[in-house]
Figure 1 (cartoon, rainbow, N blue to C red):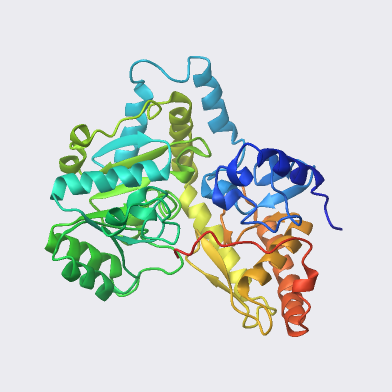
Figure 2: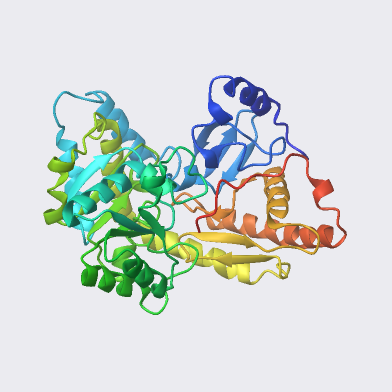
Amino acid sequence: MTPSYENSMQWLERAEKSIPLGSQTFSKSKMSLPLGAAPLFIEKGLGSQVWDIDGNQYTDFINGLLCISLGYQDPDVDNAIRDQLSSGISFSLPHKLEAQVAELLVELIPCAEMVRFAKNGSDVTSAAIRLARAYTHKDHIAVCGYHGWQDWYIGSTTRNLGVPASTQALTHKFTYNQIDTLEALFADTNNQIAAVILEPVNIAPPEDDFLLKVQQLCKKHGAVLIFDEMITGFRYHLGGAQSYFGVTPDLATFGKGLANGAPLSALVGKKEIMMLMNDIFFSGTFGGEALSLAAAKASLQKMIATNFANDIWQKGEYLINGFNQLTSCGDMFEIKGLAPWTFLQINPGINHCPITIKSWLIQELCKRNILFIGSHNLSYAHSYAEIDALLTCYQELFAQAQQFDADNTLAAMLDGQVIENVFKVR
């Protein structure tokens, strides 16, 4: 049965009168879901489940773009927030929670000798870049992956409107698992690279000691190595992907699941570099906001107590193994990535492009009470039964997609609009 999205459509029309795109986040907007055939507003969440404003219920495999690590309304985290709320939210001086959470991160993360908090990933990746420039007295940056909306990074993408050409010229892309592309950047910039920043893993795992070779190049050329662990942090290992792969960067950024949905990010790293914080003037009113720090403290303590990373690995491997046993994938569907964070890769059909196929698949998953936009963002709250339900839907829908594509009828099966790509970075 096709769900009703009447309220979502009405609220979108209302929101767009005062909010560009009707959303604060591109990946949560009508660009990422087939308009008219998927929900656009969420009312509430509990565990692995969410309810949209039309009352439709879904198993959520988006999980707030991976910021929900333990599950919606985790009782331990929410109780910590309530307890802190009785004392206050923001204060005129630092709160002891700042030191307590920083100490937990120093204990867990290999590169973390000092810690600074902010609110978003873009805050701390940008602070890391400024630190690296101050430390090395160089200006150029080598990037691989997605690192936020600030000028220094977004100027290197197709979303570069408003970024000065002089800023764009300082950031250079290299290709994951192709160390020669990074070597070429050091040569082309006459060894003026201040920092190499990358997601330590995304669609593909590192091959042929790639991360170690990146580290060695940085040491050779005097560049700061930054791991953007916004997603990989705690998910691959409680010490981050740097712990899992055994390569320690100079600086690293964390966020997303750090506080189970509360807004908090962290820049951690070597004391020698982090002490330049005072000189680069990275300062914000809400970095020490106490509710999010209380949520982070409770989240980290629960992740330690429950062996969170091992749980996510096991569920992810279960999903991969089940996917690989499907008989309906054909040449159109593949699973990519390591177990804690996997991607559904959709290949071109005979008559339809991947974006059309993906739009139809999202639509059909919504009809089957599953919320999904392309990656499997597992949380501690997800059950194996819910993973089985997703795989059952895949088995059915993959076969249908290939048949509809061969018949050249899949586009006609869309109840809404084709989704749009924000831009491709992985």
